[in-house]
Length: 178
Length: 119
Image 1 (cartoon, each protein chain N blue to C red):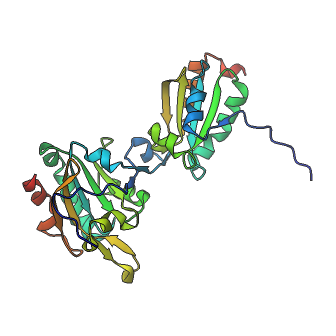
Image 2: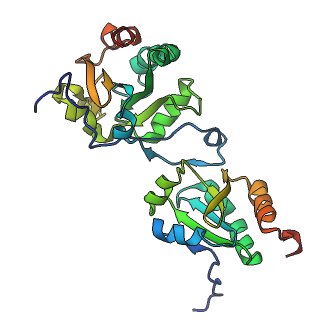
Image 3: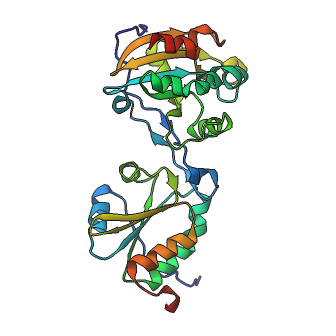
């Protein structure tokens, strides 16, 4: 399968589902309803950062990768990023809980935690964008990567090519490229 | 086998966006309950919505199963269940997210101008 590259369009044939943060969901008087995040609509005319992580609540993702992005939300806004999409292969309910656990509780939903169904979106970027963690009992997960999408077109693409977190997918690296 | 037949619910089950748009066009106040079969809080308010539908015929009550009618849920941006919408003449008057019975009943009273406690 061919690998996607800079200047290709970010695939929008599969939309991830997510549960937007809302105060009502916090109070257990309502059940969250996962809704589709329309990628084509989100990308049109805007700059979006998409970053993927192998698993919600797993150590590296929870302790380093996403907190790094959460610390820099205003910096991303200042650079004109309209949305940050965090993708994992987990279901939308786990992702919603993870977002809250990481401390993101803003109804603005500037950063959304969305489910890459069966890692299909990541797989469509290329084989190196998924990790088969079946041996660990996790199934096929997304790899760790980050993409800057400008008006639907990939402007920057960086893949950790493994499970670790390094400068490659750090917030500062992305901010420098914006 | 004899069972006491449950009277058919006065709540209209709405299955399509077209049916939905037709239902809310009414000059009667219409109240729509967006629910999911697996959602606890939705089940909790069911008896109250049923009772309201029974006692306040001046208001049209409808319900939408968000799993069966995803297009309607998407159109109206339903992100949590239950979400109760209030309409009249096709215009959205208000909505309540969550099983806030007090608010739900209060708004039915307010928009229908019916004294519910007398029914």
